[in-house]
Structure formats: structure tokens, C-alpha cells
Image (cartoon, rainbow, N blue to C red; front, side, top):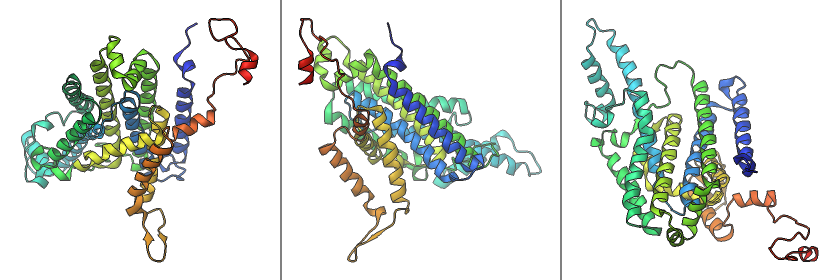
Length: 409
């Protein structure tokens, strides 16, 4: 009898149950709910962490299951943030401008309102006119579509050019990193249309919403948890079927999969594009909670961090990617936020703000050398995954292939 997806993958149900429980506990203890044990700033931190976990799941799909080490997926993450950030900044500025101009004796025209909005947004870079990239900034629906379309189309074009040329291994990793660097350098320019180094700010203020930040932070936290749950469910469904078997086959022996008649380039392109879209959605939820986005967020080092999180958590294990991203990102916040106490040694004082990256690098090296399964391997040990005890049942086609005495040895 055909077993259901959840029956074949009980870990998915466990993960979703734990995520739901975590969401419920944080909600009850948050300031927005009234208890106040968890501050609003920490709720935002947890919401951002869930978004990073979703990006790590995307990274695990492309690297852990397909074997493509992409060092550019945080570029898609940032593009998703820019797309939603454009609407947030435009609409918030429009409301401010309209309220200000309403005090004038002569009502402003639509052109005057648009010009005033442009001056407010682009005055910091010496401009006032809206660039072409802001053509749909006044429409929430279209900008939400762009959250999916822009990262997806960039990944589709880049992946098609790279995979059709059969670029693999470290060369593909270098190409993805070059793509990310080129995008970041372009966005640093003032004439990019996205305010250059200043980026987009004030994204935590939802236009037209009068609810306090304690409540808004919960809304985004719920959205992040929902996105992570759906993303995890999609990824688990994808890797559990035939498509997932082909992905692992490409990772382990690409030439053999191609010899068997599968279109390796098409599979790679689908996974690359899908994971870029997932990363874009994660970024669209992340940056309204962060409040600001600038080109530094898309720097190649960010994509390297993403790979490190997955490696520490255990690539090839979706729950490992979530564990790695959650633990490392929360520890990073703790160490770099000045919350970790300094350690005086007499001749030198260890300041974790300066030494955190060293500690992260050493952790990555240690996992690579001594624990290739990462933190996810601890889950394997806890669940004690062993071959079933068949008590001498025959396993092969011949009688006596495995008997009781053989099972005991």
C-alpha cells in the first residue's frame, strides 16, 4: 500500500510541530501579546533568524542535495529585500508628503506629489526623479511579484548560461561569487537607482499601520515562521521523491546520471532557480524586520556565511541547515552585540566582537575535519539510526541468506 508523504518522512511532522510550539511560546511571552518576557527587539531577532533558516534550507537544496556550492545565494536574498523595501519606502514617504502638502493653501497636483516624493527619497544622492526600476514601487501587488520574479529571472539567466556551458565545481562557485560581487558593486553606485551606499531605510514602519512595533514585530515573526514551515515542507517533498533521487545522483556522480538519460542541466537549472526564489522570499521578510538594507548586505562574504551555516549544521539534512543557521546566527548576535562578557587574561583582553569571526572560522574547520555530518549528525545519534533487527529473517533471494546466528555476530 502506498504510504503518505508524512508517514515516509516523520521528521517533517516533528519539525513542523516544534516550529509551531516555538511560535506559540514566543507569541505568548512577547511584549505585543502583553506578557512582556521577550522584548520586541528580541522578537525581531528571532523573526530574522527564521528567515535566515529559510535561506539555509534553500542553500542546502542547491549544495547539500545537488552538490552545487553557490556563493551567490545571498544576492537573491538581498534582491528580495530591495523589492519589498522599494514599496515600503515609497508608500511611507508618500503618506508623509501628502500630509505635509495638505497644509498648503493650494492643493498639490499629482505631479507635485510625485516630485516631492522623489526629492525626499533620492535627495540624499543628489537626484529627484524616479529611476526606471521604481516603475512599480507604488503597487504592493507588483512589488510582491518582483520579490519572486527578479531573483528567479536572474538565477534563470545566470544558471542557463553557466549550466549549458557545463561549468562545474570550484569554477561555478567562483562565477556565482563574481555575480554577487558585480551586483554589490553596481548597487553601491549612486546612479543605480537604489540610493547607493545609503540603501533603503525605515522599512520597519508599515505604511498606514498605527499598531505599535511590538505588534508589528509579531506579525512579521508569524510570517517568517509560516514561510519557514512551508519552505521546509516543499523542500522535504522535493527531496523525498524521484526528483530528489536525481538531485543526489547529480551530486554523487553527474556523468552517470547524464549517461542514464536525465537532463542534468535542466535539473540543475530548476533547483538553482527555485532556491533563488526561496531566498528572495526570505529576504523580503527579513529586511522589514531589520529596518534597513544596503549593498553591503549583498557582499560575497554574506553568501560564504550562508555556506558555513549549512556546513556546520550538516549539509544534506534539511533540519541540519535550520539548526546551523539558527544557532550560528543567534550566537553571532550575542557575540557581536556586546552581550558576551570580555575575558581579561592580564596581558590581553579577549573581546568577542573582534574574535567572533575567528571562532566561526575555527568551528567551520573543526566540523569539516572531524564532524562531516555537522550538528545534524547529533540528531542522527540521538535517534539511533541503525539497521533494523530482523532476528535472522532471510534478506536475499536464496534460502539462508541471513539466519539468527548470523544476525547475532
